[in-house]
Image (cartoon, rainbow, N blue to C red; front, side, top):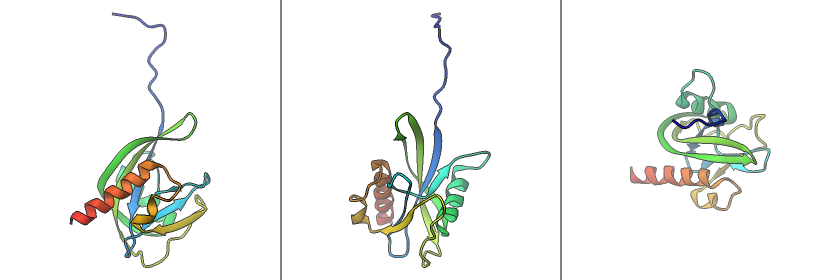
Length: 142
């Protein structure tokens, strides 16, 4: 057995659960954060809640919309700031009550609704763009 001088220390990073939510016109809900990037609604997984409970709660808190998480879309690692890593989990969500415009919570600067072809031009992590494209592709198959 080889002994090392340094004990094993597991990596630590936040886990953020995000949702891809479309309105009745099939526009995706995006929120602008303090880094001036667009992102999906969602938040850090905490306590005893499930990922699905977290994303549904965050969508309601951040937009005023009600949504049900139905499909796990993707997982990926994101580094929003140097040395700060976040494990992202995205779900495709089915929404109700999206006739009303989204409300902006204190966590974001702006809410926007974007058609599929507009997403690639936005300043946002590629992982979010990939999750959005995957949700549209799955919905198109149905």
